[in-house]
Length: 84
Image (tube, rainbow, N blue to C red; front, side, top):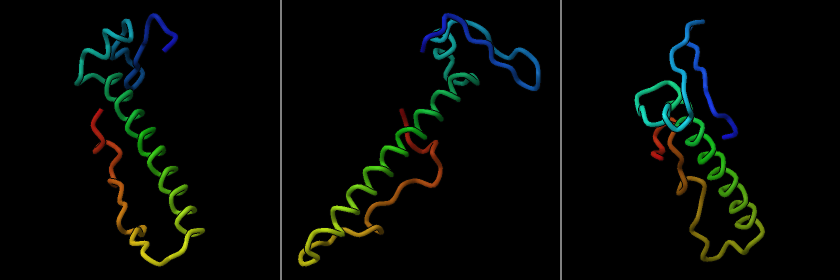
């Protein structure tokens, strides 16, 4: 992160302000939650891209002995399920 200070607004009011690392130390804070949610979403997107790539490989390979299927690879519905 290329910032030395972060200002977090909640309903137009200053909720948090400080250095990014200091704000991340507050695991219950708004900024920390946003970063965690963003990371979880990023990890979910990576997993989905990997699944799509694997699916393409499975489609182009012979089906005999291939027991992988979309049902065998499930992602959590809630991106917050992924823990960082």
